[in-house]
Image (cartoon, rainbow, N blue to C red; front, side, top):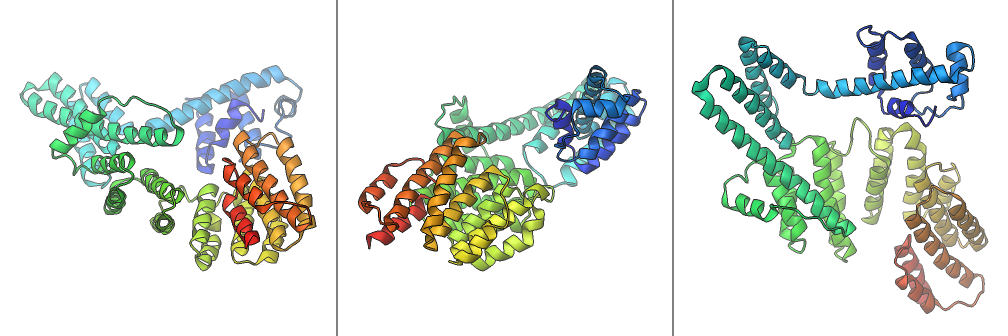
Length: 469
């Protein structure tokens, strides 16, 4: 059962949704099969991981029917899966419930209630929220269309006004959406070297430049993103984009602001990779802005990779006290399953940057890292720590065990395997130098510079430079 569609859907439910779903399937309007209710009751005992050995077909069937009736269990699983799908569709429907209500009033000829609901929805969209993303213009367009169709059926006098609103809102929605996805395409083309054909983009740019619509928030923001992507050497474009985002924080939902800050981060990273290290502090400032405005916190959770990236950047700019405070203040925002790995690993990194190698070693030996990314990075950090402590015998032993780990663990990607294997190859040569083996430091440096995929190349270069002095 663990790898069934049913379990994957149940895993996606929050605690609140799970309670709602339990009520949902107990309603005779949606379900009359008691086996389905009992199956859910048994299954959710293993929430949220659903990884317990008892989640086998045989065990659950015996619990449900008192015998090993796998066939009957599969029928119940199918029915429960369908109810899960209906429930998540229902949850999605709820977000657009009022639009469906308007359509229902229109289709039933209930003009009085239609007009009341239309005024209510216009009030909500226009005045009760400051958000002006592309969804705002989509909602405006949909309201205009429903209003136009209702007027067309009932009152021809106002058709022109309604129709003008419809096409105006449709244009703003289209332009906002087109710009947004054009930016994403160009961003992917820059990263993945994939060619896309973005039809009408040049016409769109010309239209925006010649028409006074650049004050529309979603068009303004993504037009500036587009300029930053297309003309990365013009650093003024980056500054303008950053200022535009700051000026319009209240116009976009946090999910979209997270993506917009992603463009700023990508720009900074490219500048850093090109040797423009002033953007390290810019990158750090962007992260602190995201923290201060709760943009990086989604549903009271910080993703473990965001947590790790924040620590990485803070350490690189020398903000050690800030890093320590961040780990302590924000550790409870991590998912419980990632918390121990993230806190231990990042505390170890902080100690390493502060040259507290014994403390770093103590942190790393506290816990067995279960996440593959932490498992790889912690081993690399442990090897560097042994090296810094001149514990070369332990370093040599770790190199050998690390190689075996890379060969055996099937969860490690090809890219990771190559990067860490290259790191081990050069680390081994540096360790062997200290152990009395004949090694040419210049040849080691040449090997480093000629290797494309390698983990911790900056640290390796630092160690080479120390040996060349």
